[in-house]
Every structure is written in C-alpha cells, then in structure tokens.
Image (cartoon, rainbow, N blue to C red; front, side):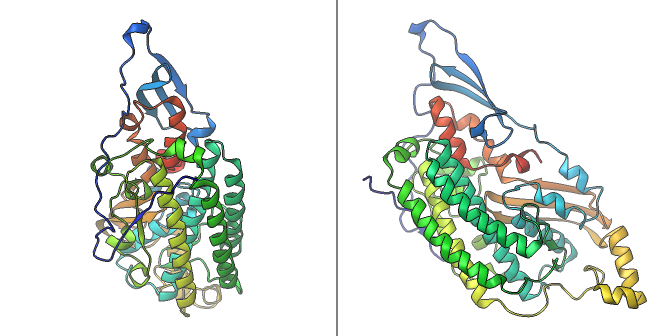
Length: 428
C-alpha cells in the first residue's frame, strides 16, 4: 500500500506545521512542442460543452500533439443568465432565490454570503441575534460537507472509482433531508433573510443534525480507505496539475485550490464573520499543490466541518432568529392583520424593499469552492445600483491555460475534478 501524503495545519499565529517549499516545477511538465520528426500538425479537439467530466457546460479548446496538450483555451458563458443585472432590477430580498442558482451545490452558503453583504451595507451585520449566527454557521458547514461530498464523489467517478460516488451521494442525500426539514426545499433553499432567517429550526432537527454528523464521519473514513492509499488513484493524481504557491496567489485562487498549494488563507480565520472566531477548527494545507493535495484538503475540511457542527449544536443559544426591526424584517402575520404600523411596514418592505443607505460595500465569505464575494454599490432605496459577484469557480477556471499544457489528455479529467468548479456561479 502506498504511504499517504501528510497535510500541514495552520496554527493560530498563521504559521504552518512545517516550512512550505515550492515544488521544483509546474506545468508544463513535459516538452509542449510538437515533435518535428513526425512532420504532422497539431490536432484541435473540443472537450465539452457536453462532456461528463467538464461538470457542466464548459468547453475547452485543446491543441494536441498526440496525447500531449500544447494549448488549452476554456470557453465559458453557456450558462450565463445575467444574475448581476437581474439584481439591479429587484429588491435586496427578491434576489435571495437567485443566489441559490449560483453554486447550486451549496445554496445555503450562498444565501448567507449575500445576506451578510446586504447587512453590512445596512450596518446591521453586528446586530444579528446569537441564535441566528449559530444557525447560519450550521447551514454553511452543512453546505460545505454536501459540496465536498459531491465534488470528491464525482472526481473519483471521473477517474473510474464508482464505489466512492455511491458512498458520498448517500451521505449527501441526508444533508438534503435536513435541508428539506429546515427550509421546505431540498435544492433551492432560499432560507436566509436580510436581518435573520426565514424560520427557526423545527422540533428535533438538531438531534437529526447530530446523528448526521456521526454518520458522515464514518462515511468519510470509508472514502479515505477506498482512495487515499489506492495505487490507481495516486497514479492519476499525484504530481498532476501542480500549482505552485506563487502561481496560486498570482491567479487569485481561493478555497481548497489555494490551500492545496500551501497558502494559509481561510476567511473564517483571516476575516472572521458570524461566530467563527468563537469556534475551534484547523485549516489544512497541502505541500505540493497537485490534484492529490487538493483531494486531501477537501477530505480534511469535511472532518473540520463536522467538528464545527458539534460545537455549534452544543452551544446553540435560544432566543429570536431575526433582528427586532420592522423596517428590515417582515413583521409577524398576526400583527400585520391587527395593527396599522406593522401593515405599513410589510407593504413598504414587499413593494419597495429595505431602505439601504448610499454607499459601497464588499463582503466575501469562505464558501466550499472558495471566496464568494458580493460588491454592492447603493444610491439609496430598495434596489442596488450595481451588484458584482466574485465567483470562485470563474477564478479557478482562469488558470487552465497555464495549468493544462504539457499534460496528457487523460490528465484533464483529473485536473478538472480536483479544481471542483460549478458552472452556475462561473457563468452567473
């Protein structure tokens, strides 16, 4: 059995467990010039946009010399829906369901990131009730586990490990059951609201969440046994798609793709939000920056998310889940039907939206695929003048022209799976 590679962890002072040395080289890992002795011309091959390993409608124009890639040009935009322009024509609350359609594998985390950006604009981000903050963290970590389960499952299936996909998908269904109990929907949750949450957790939900945390820990161990020391898995991923530390920073990678290259940057630690500064968890770091390291980082991140879940469930306080401000949060229905002031507040909120002050804000959250950021430019009123989404998948795909040349055609499948992107947020 192959000896597994070890991860490093960042300590509280930001130092790593061992000094990180950049790998001796990066892609191209082979001579990317065509063999002139063959006297042929490079072959142009379209990979996608309908290809099972492109994880959505991604097209990559590959220039090949035999099996070796000379040039790679990603072609995106097949799923473009104009989300940012739509946001400028809706109230802040009306845009929440559209955030579900960004990284549609982690809609709960998208909802939270967007709501925190709007709350920062309103100046109420520090006024959120403690119960709301803990529940939002639980939602974000459930989304992280769900996203990584599917990412690793599809990554393994792409390179031939079908059994792993069955294990991870089974656990992901349990997350969907929790989402259905909490939000009423399995896929497009739209659970977060500006200033709080749509509703509190139903009776018994926290116990179900604890049970899931125990069961998914065993499932992660099973996946680890199936893959981490697997000879075929190691051959397909080790020293493939190496992204050196400086290159990862230069291309503005975030999330596991950045930390896989040994860069200690996690927004939950660097710029804490909600109650992350009150929780104990470690940030795993890779040592080489190849596909294998990115896999190891995601595996450890799931274990750390389970650790966070246990802490949040144990420390979950009571109290309300929304701020007590009728000009931001919809009043309760009995009061709307019996009191004039609450009726007016509901009418204004529904028709005009929250009255945001003029200004510009940016908020970035540590989503499963990296930093999901929202830049909002407000001129006052209930709709943003401009809204820009910083999607981690778009940034991750920008490195493909640098990363793919020199690899073989079969390596593309491993590299794409290790980057774990989703085209919904890339194209927006």
